[in-house]
Image (cartoon, rainbow over all chains, first blue to last red; front, side, top):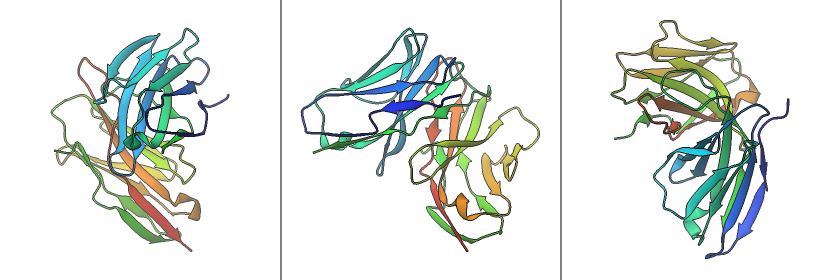
Length: 117
Length: 116
């Protein structure tokens, strides 16, 4: 069974540009979550999608957006890039949405490393 | 206040020794889940073990076990008989209950280095 795939793996952009990252979940998984990882802030939750609907969003500005398609693939978009957006962006998929103490393992992809110059 | 605290930024351990990675958490929810992930230098997060707040037994998965002390809000990861391949970043994470879904809240991580 193929794991979570993320494309591209590496990306270099300049300030002010926009970027779109893609995530293909494990076959059959309908929930996709996005996380940002930086040396300073660590791992932070961006948003979660289930059945093409955003269920929740972390504490990020509106420049960060996402969507999910009917085949559960997800994209996230960052507009007007800033230097501080340089990070590893991780996507995770699960069978069902997250919630409380229920066991719901999230499988992570290899990440997209974004560098903003 | 931090919701997940990992007090050991880095650890050096001799191969074959047991390792305990500390994690304390803060939540007012009764329903929550605790996770440990391993992140090697390649960047991918690898799920290790899970403990639900209502689980009475400590979770175990092969060489990994979770020492869950609910009253102390502690969820330490124990790795028995460490191996060179265990060298990586280790993250403790929590997902809280309630009506919403806020994803996982991660600690800052512990960089574990296994020495031969």
